[in-house]
Image (cartoon, rainbow, N blue to C red; front, side):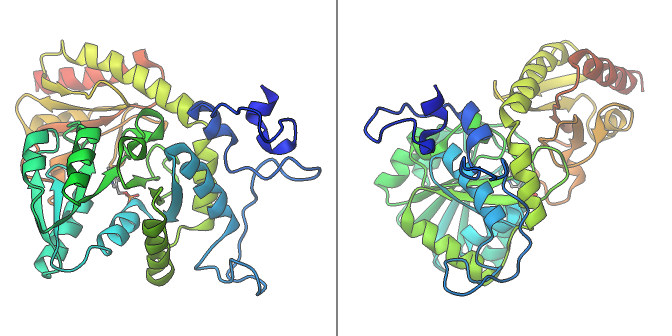
Length: 373
Ligand SMILES: *Cc1c(COP(=O)(O)O)cnc(C)c1O
């Protein structure tokens, strides 16, 4: 057991079979300094704009040991090498900047609204063509993979429609058509879904959400097992300069240490709330993919009634973003950039790790209020 957890400390001979660590262990173990006398257990926060010449780091825009530790941990979890960014959108924009002008991107109609805005601005400037598809309709997606398509942009589950894509089938069809696949894995986290293992070329994360997990840091990641893509993305980060803050990387790595506990609890709470919400007369429809801590409810009566719900919770915070320890909710169409096919009365719920009965009693009194008017 010791050898399993500490392969680098010499307890295990090089040729002894070494079963891979469970992801539950990797979140705790990966990205640590070596087990040597006087080494700290955690990577310190290294504030540096430059390094003594002659090594690999050279300059603060190219590398930082604190980002390095965070990237090592997330890379190990996803089964690739990670590059961290200033935000999830910095990661998304950097990837989209790698598409050759004139090529087509096929993307999930209900992917994150920031991604949609970025795609449409690239399209308006004539840089890419964009085809939007229902990502849970595998045949429709595959039919869209024509000759000029360079990239398939998958998000699963989608934000906030919560559609689930058949990632292995899409990757197989895309690769047969010579199309690269990116999966935004923000909602599922690498504990519930590892797209690189299902054939995806690249994973992108808003680390702001579950990975950092405490609503106190904005950060993003690209992860890939393809050396050529890794080099291209790293080069883009160096030149575009959308670097993560060092403190943010440190906070996100600290948050990552409890990812499995937070996701397990949020998921258990979400599943229980889904059962209770389905019975409530104010709720027309509950959307839940069957895993994870995000769900959406459609409120009978549309925008005004849904606003009444988000305006009457005390424990649930009315706020955008998701994946924090605290439960929050938001009517997504309050954003003009949200897809018009998202219902006006849809509330996205990010279920936290509080006591589920407390969460229900607060939510149900707000829903009662919406019914009674
Ligand atoms: C929040 C989010 C993003 C953008 O990430 P930021 O860290 O806010 O820039 C991208 N994709 C999904 C699915 C998200 O939820």
